[in-house]
Amino acid sequence: MFPHRSAFLAPLAALLGACGGTAPPPPTQTAAQEPAPTPLMKADAEWKTALTPEQYFVLRQKGTERAGTGKYDKHLEPGTYVCAGCGHELFVSDSKFDAGCGWPSFSSPATPAGVKENPDASHGMVRTEVTCAKCGGHLGHVFDDGPAPTGLRYCINSAALGFKPKSSK
Ligand SMILES: [Zn+2]
Image (cartoon, rainbow, N blue to C red):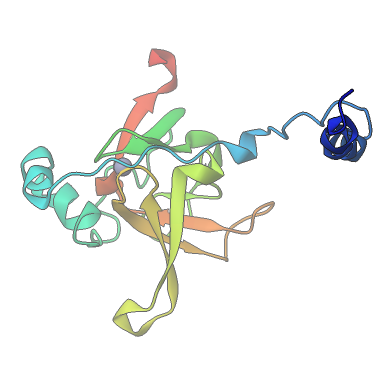
């Protein structure tokens, strides 16, 4: 006979019992859980050649363009705003609003995984920096004085953005 048979089957039975005999629940998949994009790494010298001086200043040196000078500040066309560094989709025009602050403002990112938010204590202020989740480029800051429903204001430099009009998609 097989003296070890029951010893072998016991753990298996315990395993099956743990499942309760039903199929495991399907993985929860919502738009909000979109995986973070694969990081794009480039050497500083590469960024310097690939970007305009203003894009480089904002994206790679965490600079801020002067208020009211950015090309997307009063820009109202429907479409998608992408990262000027890597083309990653960051914001859609539906969430854009005029905060009157001189920079393009959005109430939410295109996808939560599309941008990263990091604490920033520079310039004597405690702020939350927003960066591109793909290339790590500095985009701007997010403040909690935005409109409903999010109450957030993503204050973004035009120089960090590119734009794809809706019709061309
Ligand atoms: Zn990027």
